[in-house]
Amino acid sequence: MTGNRRDGGLPDMIERAWRCTVCGYIHRGPEPPEWCPVCGSPAAEFEPYDAAAAPRAGLQAAGLRCLNCGFPAPGGEPPDECPVCGSPADRFEAVAEAATAAAAGSTAKVLIVGAGIAGLSALEAIREAAPGAELTLISRERELPYYRLNLTRYLAGEVTEDELPIHPAAWYEEQGIRMLLGEEVGELRPGEHGVVLCSQEVVPYERLILTAGAHPFIPPVAGAHREGVFSVRTVEDARELLTALRPGVRCLVVGGGLLGLETAAALGRRGAEATVLEGHEWLMPRQLNRRAGELLAEHLRTAGIRLLTQARPKEIVGDERVAGVDLDDGLHLETDCVVIATGVRPNSHLARRAGLDVNQGVVVDNALVSSRPDILAAGDVAEHRGVLYGNWFASQYQGRIAGLNAVGSATEFGESRGSNTLKVVGLDLLSVGRFEPEDGSYYVIEEEADGRYARFVFHDGRFIGAVLLGDASAAGAVKKAIESGCECSELLRKEPTAADILEHLQAR
Image 1 (cartoon, helix red, strand yellow):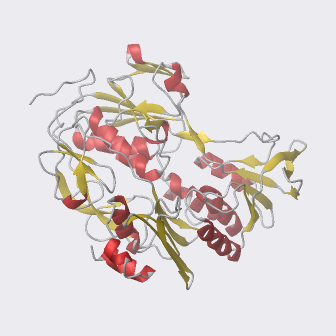
Image 2 (image 1 turned 90 degrees about the horizontal axis):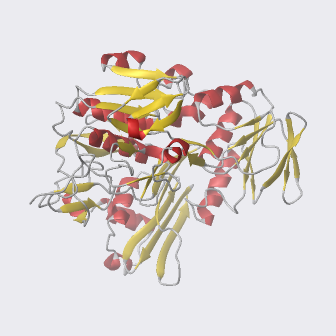
Image 3 (image 1 turned 180 degrees about the vertical axis):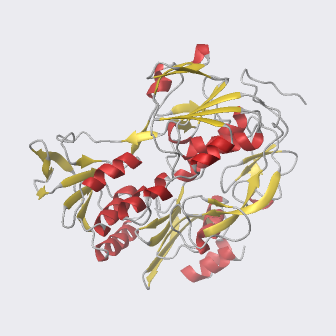
C-alpha cells in the first residue's frame, strides 16, 4: 500500500490506525501496541481509529510521569518530590517513552520560536532523533527555559530563582543549540523561509515550530492599567510582584482558578493579606461541582485565604496607583495591589499577520502542521480540532510530537482527553470526564468523610466522570477507567460505596 505525501514530507496514510482511549496517542500497525508510548495503557485500552496514518513508533524502556504536572522521571523509582510541582512519590505513574524514529541523518535547519515547555520539548525531541539537525531557539525572555509551573512556588519562597531553569546553560552548549534569548520576533516570512527579529536580523529556517505560548487575559475592567496591578506569567512578572510585597500588604487576586488560588496562597506565605475574587458561585467551576468547590473553599479559608464568590470587579480605583476595587454589586474593597489571574490568550499575532490559518490559536492537524507545510505549532498557541489545551502536559506532549515531525520522525497527536490532576494549596484533586449529570438517566455516587470527598458519575452503566478531593492516590486508575468507558453495570447493581468503586477500578 502506498500513501500520498504533502509538501512538508509528512505521510498521509500508512496501514491501520489505533487510538489510545486514555491519552489520545495514535498508533499505526496491524495491531495495537502492547503498551501506549505516552501513558503506558495496555493494548486493551486502544480502539480502531479512522484517520490519516503515520509510521509506527517503537517503545523504549518504561519510565515514570508525575500525574500532577507531567514531569518525566526516567527509570523505575520516582523522586521523593516532583521538582516541578512538589507532588510526593505516590503521584507518579508508569509510562513508556516513544522511541525516536530513524532520523539520525537529518541535517534539517529547525527554528523554534518560544521557550516554554512546548518549545523545550520540541528541542529535546529533535536532538534525540536527529543529532545532526541545526537548531535555533528564540525567546523573548532573557532567562533560560524554566519551570513556569514553579512561579507560584518562587513567589512563596519555596524555590529560588536559580532553581527555576530546566537545564543549565552548559546543556545547550553541549547540544550545539543556538540560543537567542531576550530577542523578539517581529515578523514571519513564510515565503522566504525566515523570521525577522525586532533587531532586524533575519533568521532562516527549513522547518519552523511556533511555540510562542500565551499572554495573560486582562478583562475589560476600568483602571486595569494602574500602577500596582499585576499578572503572573513570567519570571519578570513574579519579580515585579515581589517588590510590592511586605508583611500586612493587602492584595486582591481576581480569578478563583488554579493560578489565582496558588498565587493567593503564595502571597499569604509572604505575609500579605490575600483575598480571592471569583465571579462564579463556587471555585474552579470548570473542574469541580458545587460541593467540591465549597469544600475547597473551606480548605483555603483554614489556610488563611479570604474568598468572595460572585464577586465581579467593575473598576480598579485610585490615582496613578491602585487604592481599591469597586465590585458590580456596589461593594468597595480597599487594597494595595491587584493580581489578575483570569486565564490566558494565545500569542497568535505573528501567525495571523503571516497569513497562516488562525482561529483562536494557530490551526494544526494531527501532525501539528499548520496551513503552511513547513511550519508547525505546539503548546498554548496551537489549536487542534478546535481545542486550545492550555496546560503543561499537553504542551509538553505536543512539543515532542512537533519536534519529531519537523525532522521526519512522523507521529501524531490524537488529542488529550479532559482531566485535571492537581494539588491546590496542598490539597490533592482529580477532576475527569463529565462530573455533572445532564438529566435523570445518570447515576451519581457521592461520599464525604475525614476531609475527603468522592463523586462518581455513571451513564448507561458506564463510568463517565469523577471528582476526588483530599485523596487522589487512585487518579491513574480512575482516569483510565473513565477514558476507556469502563462498563460497571454489574457493580452498580450491588449499590457500591466509593471504596467499592475504587477497589474495583484499581483491580482492573
